[in-house]
Image (tube, rainbow, N blue to C red; front, side, top):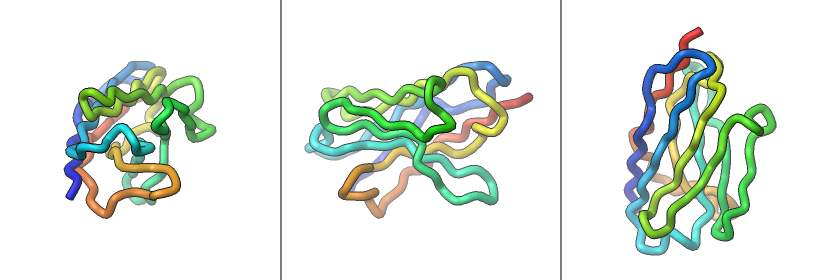
Length: 117
């Protein structure tokens, strides 16, 4: 079973920045596409950004230019740099596998991001 541990969330004012980290406990982390997802109160979980095993990235249209996903395979870690944060970015952020294999059934505890206006 893969364990996912997210960190880096917090309370920030609109326009601020945060960097999220996620460590995945799998020996073959480097072969997987990984993604950041978020779930706001009363809403379904949505995919925010993905990074494949070659470093190729995709983003939700509404987030392009503000968020940057990256990975460090040596540390089994995926990052999400979030700039110019808006109140509507408030959500619990999770990482998980992405791409054609889909997400693992297990989800970590997530990290809360709260953006005040």
